[in-house]
Image 1 (cartoon, helix red, strand yellow):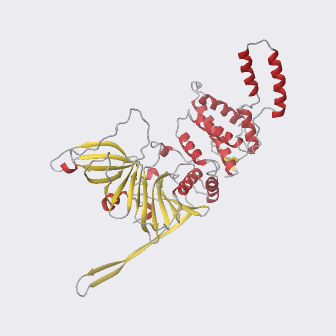
Image 2 (cartoon, rainbow, N blue to C red):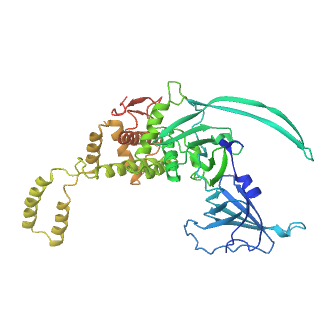
Image 3 (tube, rainbow, N blue to C red):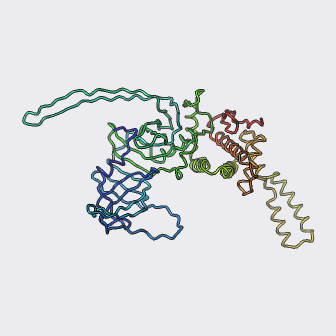
Length: 475
């Protein structure tokens, strides 16, 4: 068994799972089960039953948006398991002379399946992933050795045993990278998978020890951020010493309807050596670790979710998404207790004095009472600085310079956010402005994380790297 590319789906219903607990949405007398992945790698299960034994489909209002949280226990030869987020999607009956007992096929989509063989603690965990950066030259190596012995025994009062050694194999390869996250070691690498096509760039993450589910999600997100591309998670296998499998999880991967496969690797900061495709472990480790350490304090789980959705959105909507993310970060940082970034035009004591004078002047004017009330409310909020002024103060506080190109891109962002019509033939200009907004977002995040002192300028031809504080040159 290749632990780095082990897909337990084929063996689960063949050797381990014997049935599933009764449910209103299942046939009453199940004959057999078949677990599989569909063409989009989503988990599904076929339930076979008698021709007249069909499940009842829940009656839901047309257009209802819901998440299935149904969970059913599995009947197993060994261990225990459950399928979670199960949802009936199709029922088909086809009767022949030989299949009446299994003529009905009910197909269910599954969010995830969990299976536990033993309560022993895991010594290491292997996750199956995909969507690694393509054509990457990995910095670290692994050495693989295999040897064994063939043994044949003839029974009887005096058994006869024949033994001979099997030829050994020895393989050394540079196809992985080792990352440290606090007390956790994660080794990520590429593989040639039997089940995941090469075009999806399959791989694995090996964890020494047993980090919990939330920690491993943080590590995957941190590595995704470092690589500039979302890693797609397929499941995990848990092992004790001696490569004994003690548990597993398989999931329907989150691919945003398959669009994550189209996201090119675009890290915010340089992570390659002078050889364009060779991973430089030091800057990539710093990026990943800084993301991991700030995951909760900067709400990076929400950030990374929004980033990947922005990356797969239509080009004419990306300015709105990137701009919204920039404004959210500004609001979050300037609103923190102790922030020295002022939200007012003039100091509050000066404005309180000014508003008294303005109020007295207003009261002396012969205008309707309702109008005076509206003017008074305007005066009370009149010291709030415009968003652009707050943004300038925010960038200055971070030590980030914005030039004419960045300011012009921000103005165009407002067109997308407010639904203004684009001039015919302005598509190329719009795409270039979108690249600038993404660069602004990258510089802000890198500064807050202290993840790098350089950024990649995706606006300029050749994608040069620049000092984090420097703006994109006008020419």
